[in-house]
Amino acid sequence: MRIISMVLTSLVLFVLPACSSSAKPKPRLPLPVSSSVPQAVITATQQGTHAYAGGQYQEAKTQFEQAVAGAPDSAEAHYNLGLALFTLGETDQAREHFIEAANLAPGNKVIWDSPALRPFGSPDSTIPTKTKEDKYSTRRPSFGGLGPR
Image (cartoon, rainbow, N blue to C red; front, top):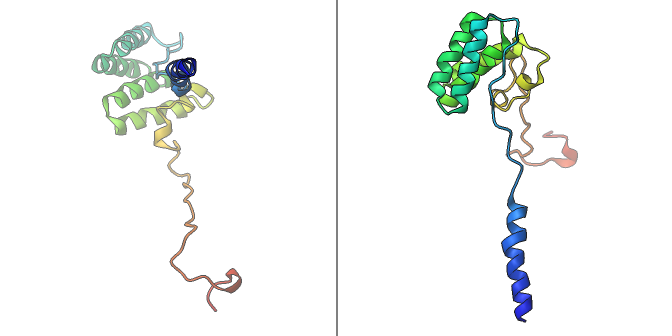
């Protein structure tokens, strides 16, 4: 009896915690800009990435704003600024930069599939959203599902 209780105790201590661990989502990281942008933009992006990794999001925002000012056509710069704004809770401004990044880099899967962009829905506001049909109604059922006569 004592052996059975020891086996059950070891199962509870070692097996169950392993079952409860789930895959953690990938952390959101700033993207490097392309080498075709000015050196000042590359430097600002590197400094912003370092600040972001250190949890200094306001400093990262400042550096990424400089990067966007130096390379307004850089999708990565807009994405990085959006990421910093999103982390700071400035979601309206973050949305604008995420959408701009997605428009500038239509084939960049990291930008399009990023968890930071998903909460904002489709980047094109002209696309109608699908609404769920209400399966339940307050109307009385009719014969054959044909409705009232």
